[in-house]
Amino acid sequence: MTEEKDLKVEGEQLARIAVESEMGSKQLQTIYRLVKTKPTAYVQAYIQRQIGRGVRGLSAFMKVLELSKKYEEQRMVFEKVLMYAIMLYDYVEAEPIVKLRAASEGIVRDIVNRYGATFEWLQIKLFGNTAEIRVKTERFHGNPKALAMEIERALNEKVPEFRNVRLKTWIE
Image 1: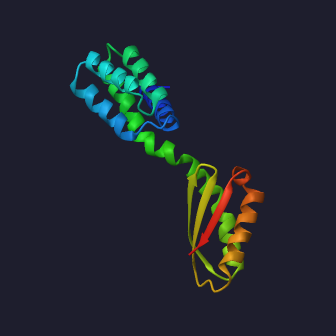
Image 2: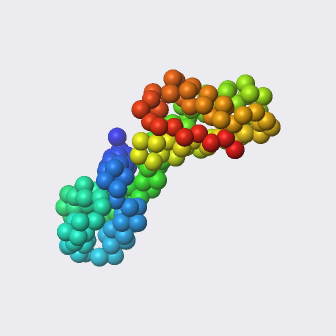
Image 3: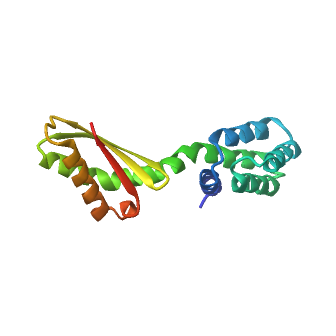
């Protein structure tokens, strides 16, 4: 792998840690701006201050502090790692939902078509152990509850990620 690919991988790892530990993307952006404009010691002090304040994202702050020490003499490399982390943050955050949509869309489309309606789109939102599913249809004149129940049943059977999740399905 080239050096740039290594930096992207390291940035993606940081983005994953940031999302998992609930560090906000704005915090990463703030650190990135500081790295571009302030001395490394200042950036490290800022990160330590945030850790001391008990803000969300402890493991991400610890990882950024570790990276700041690793690349203390290579400021541009540290900037690039942070840049990749910021670029990939939204993707990493949305990745579980994207995978669920990809696994679900064909199943939902088939069921909606069986009811004689046209499938428009599918939206999935996760709230802890609950998944809210919104299905937009056109020319659907049947019982929305029956359609929603059939969609939930099919998703529970065919998509393993939905087996231990409470589904709330809305037909629009």
